Image (cartoon, rainbow, N blue to C red; front, side, top):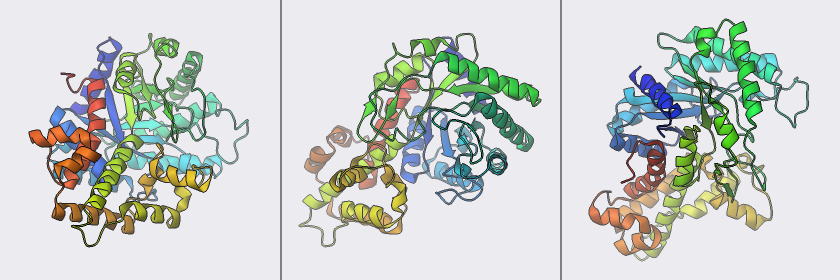
Length: 433
């Protein structure tokens, strides 16, 4: 309860111009989550951790976890990191019919209702309700968003399911969705336009009306934010950085509302861009792929170090080669429809794309074993400071000063925390000094 109140106070403070924000870690990756917990522990802050409707649902999602499994998983990780579980806010991202878009609306919404009930029952208290996608039997132009009135009515139905399953403390809600879809733009674009202020006002008016008609007036009072697109996005090899002048009208659209904005796809934004987003009331920052991308970067750097030490290592991990093999042979559907071009271009994307589709493959047994072998080889051989300087130069001074550990895993954690520290500073959890 205390963390929820702290979150609400922080957002209210932002509305008054304090420049305070929050970031939310959207990942199920163990190392990313451990780095996040250690960062929050150092900053003495609360931490928001979210799972999506595709990752975690009543059928297991692509992680194989249901809501109760994910909650238990986070609790165990928090304990191992010495971080109080009570300081974690569990969130649900894009909770709605998204996993079942191929079914008729009635079936999809019923399954989404079961989904949100399971999240709330397991203690998730930050709930993003997203019913904005077309289902199989929905009429209309699918190149445009689903009508606000339909989205709002379905959102209210899902909210009712949440309210009915809440035992004690009621959830806080996020409404709306961003365009394009989550996870980064799929095509090369020349510009990302901020959401039109009128569109936000129409969405909120339709939502409020639907909530009131459904007898959810009190629940509407717990809606804390609306998702909007302020002009930030990323694709395979391009990033659209925040330009506050272009988003000025959108920034001011909530001046007479207690709500703030939640922004998805903030990955890879500069520290200054993140700080400006928070100052302009786009103050709930979601991050995910940038953190697993940092994990991949660190592992590939360690793999380069391992190759330089081949005279000491009898059986190398062949990490990069194993990653390529697994991506080609094990469920290529995670990347095939996202990466295009020549075979060389697709090979490059599998390794280095900012959309980081490789993140789906780290749990695969063969690749997980290669990672463990890499760590074991480097722990036995020892990592010379000269090779850290060559392949992970930003970690040399922390190593020399003793602020990070010398083990391979310590270097990976430190590299991921470099991203997290940028978010912590932008949100005011960490001093710029």
